[in-house]
Image (cartoon, rainbow, N blue to C red):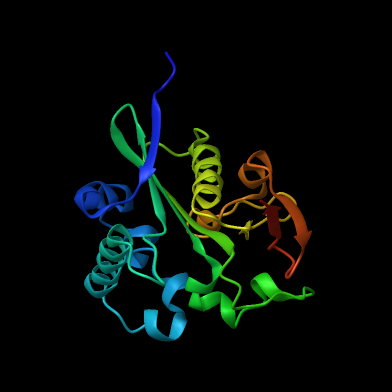
Length: 201
């Protein structure tokens, strides 16, 4: 029997479901989807509770339509159970990338171009991994960016070396397959293991 998958915008009233996806330990729980958004300098010194507070504020602001900030995330349900998360928002909202090689190396991009959206982070709940949910989340993220008026959408997946296993804590940025299936194509290779993929909308 095929599982029923539904992907919806993350909202304050779904907070308990968001936390169910992040779990009570591991990378998603500790990060609260804040490291790329806040940047290492601010993120590193925050407790998990403080990171969660920032996330809750982002969900609240996005729902209220506050200018300059979107909730920037979608939540996936499998047969009614919260199972996955993906962050997608204007690229300008992700502070960590402004000083990184990703996504700028070898490209001539305007860092202040809010028309380019970025899919930056995936989380899949234990028990739902390796079932293709990242593909559903990537496709939904692209659709959400398009519906929100994005001019382009990018992803920055990681690629394993030959015979190399990637730990789940690293694969949170995604792998090329789900992005390719969602219509993105590779535009650059800023590091040995990272790719920039893009779809102009």
